[in-house]
Length: 90
Image (cartoon, rainbow, N blue to C red; front, top):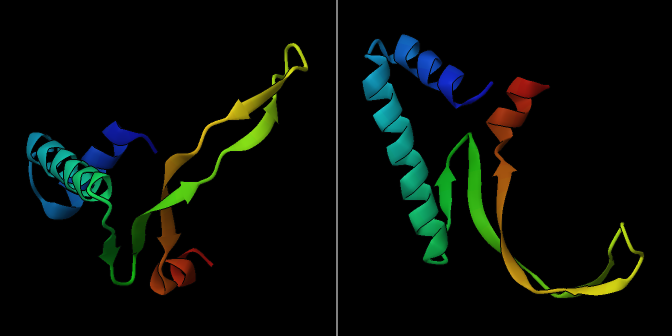
């Protein structure tokens, strides 16, 4: 499912227009991104939690040349599925 399909599905379930569903989805994405950028987390009970994890720097290898490279430290967005979501999937 891509973003367009998700918007169509939201519009159908919520009985709203696709334009409104698109705005809602974009607002959700922007709110989550803003909170994660500020170093916080977003928890949706039963669905899951979005958070930020720190990845330390490490050694890597360029697959084309085989030369060793240093991969810098960075922040990684993380999603952990909630219990209810896990149960629905299984």
